[in-house]
Length: 358
Ligand SMILES: Nc1nc2c(ncn2[C@@H]2O[C@H](COP(=O)(O)OP(=O)(O)OP(=O)(O)O)[C@@H](O)[C@H]2O)c(=O)[nH]1
Ligand SMILES: [Mg+2]
Image (cartoon, rainbow, N blue to C red):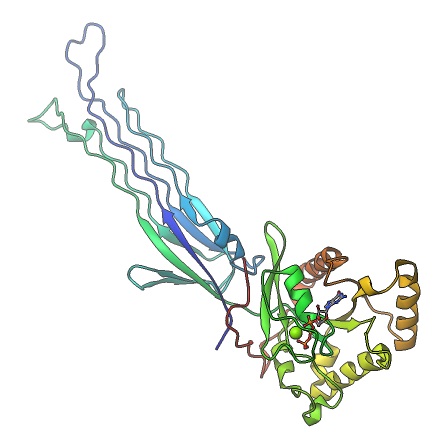
C-alpha cells in the first residue's frame, strides 16, 4: 500500500467562436462579395509538470478550470480572436485519469512535460470560405465547435520530505495535527501511533511539503523493545528529520537528554545513512515551562546533549513556534532540492489510510 495524494477536478475548454455571414457594403458597390470572418479558437487546457510543486493540495481547493470561448468572426474579413489557453501546474509523478472512461491521459514523468487535457473548440467558418464560381454570394457559415470537457482524477504517490522522530508521547502526532490537516490520534499514553501518518504542510499558497509521523521509538528498539524500529524504514527517503523531544515531562524521573541520546543511538543502530541524514532538534511542550525559564532550559539541554545544530522551541499544543518551524523546513527543502535522496532500498512509503488533508 502506498500513500496517495489525490484530487478531482473538472476541465472545460472554450467553445470556438462562430463564423459569420456578411457581405461587403460600400458606396457605389451595390452588391459586394462575402466578407464574413471565421470565429476564433476556444482556449485549451494543458498541464505542465513542475518539479517545484510537491503535492496536489492546490487542486483540492481549485476544482473547476474553464478556458474562455473564442470570439465570433465579424464582417469586413475580421477573424474572431482566439481565447488564451490555461496551463495547470502539477507535481512530477502525477497520474491523470479521465474519470468517465477510466483512461489514463498522462503520467507526468519529467519536469516541464506538457500535455493537452481538454482541447478548445475550432472556430466556425465565415461565409468567405464558401464562395465559389457557382455561388458568389454564399450565406453559409459554420458554428464554432464545443470545447472538450472532462472530469479528471489526479493521483500522486507521495514521498515524505520530512520525518518526525522521537520517544512515545513526545508530541509527534500533535505536531503533525498542528501543521497539516492530517488527524492522527493523540493521547497521553505511549505508542498511540501504530501506523505512520502523512500530512501535507502548506506554508503559503503554492509552497508545501509532506511530513511523516511514525510510531515512537525507545531504547532497545533495535532489539525489539516497544514497537521495534522497523518503522524507521519509512524515513529512508525523507530529506530532513525532526527529532521531537518533550522538554517538560510529567514524570519527574524522566531524563529528556538521556532519552534524546537513546533515540539517536537507535537511529545509528538501524542505519548509518539515516543517522547521517540532516536532523534538527525540536523541543516541544514549551507551554509547560515558565516563559522566563525557557532560554535556560534550552541552553542546559543543548549543552548537556552537546548539540550545536538547528534547534526549535515549539508547543505543538498551542501552536507556538510551529509556523517558524514549518517556514524554516520549507526554506531548507527549497535550498537543498538537489540533494534529494536517491531511491534507497527499503525506503517504501507508509501504508496509511486517511492521512493528508487539504
Ligand atoms: N502541554 C503540552 N502537551 C502536549 C504537547 N504536544 C503534545 N502534548 C500531549 O502529549 C501527549 C502525547 O502526544 P502525541 O502527539 O500523541 O505524542 P506522540 O509523540 O505522537 O506519541 P506516540 O504516538 O505514542 O509515539 C498528548 O497527551 C498530547 O496532548 C505540547 O506542546 N504541550
Ligand atoms: Mg503519535
